[in-house]
Every structure is written in C-alpha cells, then in structure tokens.
Image (cartoon, rainbow, N blue to C red):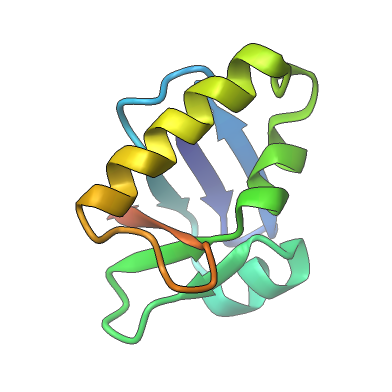
Length: 102
C-alpha cells in the first residue's frame, strides 16, 4: 500500500490498496505534514520524523470500496507481520516509512 499525500493541496490518496507487502507514505509538494495528517484524521508523525503512525480505522476508510472481507484479511496479516517487527504502536497505529520526493 502506498499513501500519497499532496502537502500543497492537503490531499490524501491510497494507491495499491491490495498490496500488503509494502506500506509507506509518499509526500508531494510543500506543506505541513502534521497538519495534513490531523485534518485527514489519518495519524501522526513520529518524533524522529521518519514515519507516520497510521490509524488502522482511518486507513480502512481511505481504502473505500477496496476494503472488503479479503482486504480485511490481508490487512490483518500485514499488521501481524508489522507487529512482529515492532512496527505497531501500543495504540494500534502502524508505522509507515515516509518517502520524500527529490
């Protein structure tokens, strides 16, 4: 899954919602990531600024019609893998690496 955030327009889009072996946030444009995340209700930036802690409920909503029963199963598997790597916060938020455009 790839969450694309256009910071200039404060637009958040989920691409490749059925791809569960990748989870990252791609940033486009200029702006305040924390503000856009807050407005979208998607999550928060980690203290080191390298990851977004994504709220699973907000991610499911962002997935829209793709979030069917099969999606739920795939996402649960991805979260279990992430938990095993220490990539899930105590509040259930899942870490997504931030990819900044060059």
